[in-house]
Length: 262
Image (tube, rainbow, N blue to C red; front, side, top):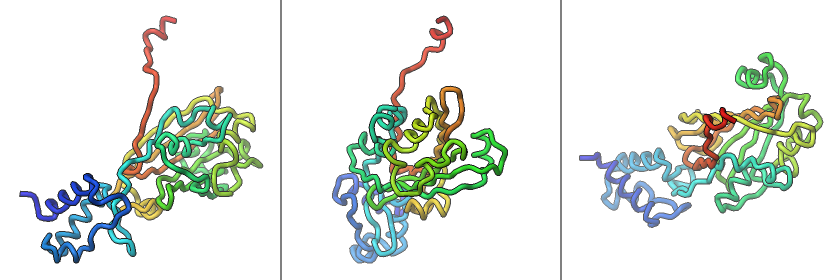
């Protein structure tokens, strides 16, 4: 037989999935469930911790245990970088995700800080620089309403961005079209990129910043952006709350045997 806390967690999870507890609604206080005969204080607490680990609820001091939004954001793949979005319009990548998800957004939901820092080994290797070389770090925290969804820190060579809007710490994207448009206007048109994804448990600092429960997972993104001549113009590291995104990729299936004969 399943432990009592597991039975209670499963029962509450089913009620959440049926919509009896809606997103943003607070679950009953632990003492109320104890008084209702659902188990001891430790049993109810363990059930709530299980629901947190499964991404169904979030707990915080002063707000209790609240049901999370269950429909994750679409984190679209290739389409989010369509040049028509940022070069000809003003739909930067995080906004493209919101549009694809049918969700509202405000440009000010992206905050940022910009600093000139020594390149750590990962950044130095991506840019082909000696470790410790100066680079600009543009660190963003993106929220949906009051809830953080991810961080993204882009690293640039100073000679590519010095004096541009990219080094302006004003909240929101770096002007119309964001950072890619700034690079385009400076003569560095992006041509191709590589994205690598790594799943892991959030560090305590990441959990605090993204408002995650202890033990929750994140997806770490490494994005390397190139011009047509393979010059690296941006290397970015993103930390995404795993339960708040669905990663979607649409692409043409390659046929390398056909390409080799052409």
